[in-house]
Length: 103
Image 1 (cartoon, rainbow, N blue to C red):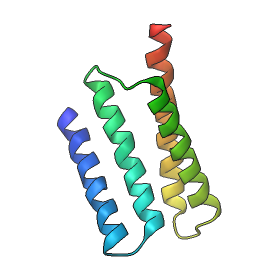
Image 2: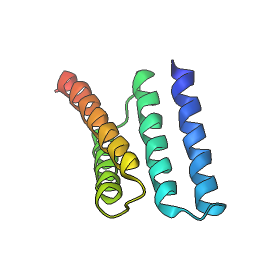
Image 3: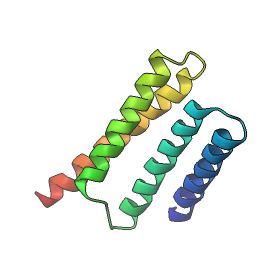
Image 4: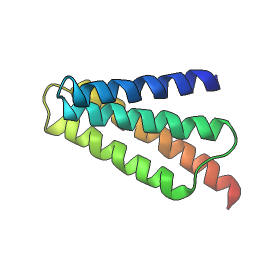
């Protein structure tokens, strides 16, 4: 399972680099980088070494902002916006689960 998350993170990171430098699609590149960030954070959470709460809050904020931009401003990427908002929700649930236990 951990290898699956790491492979997805690396694929989205590579896809983001391709979209940024070769395809010249910066909006889709940012979306790919943020999805890779979500899977990277989830990878370390599943390893039992979660990041600090600020990393989760920053990730949630960036995913929500990306989702809103993709939903409201960029008409070609409505599905990307929905995916970003969904991952932000999943990251929020992880944040609540981790830091409710520690409090």
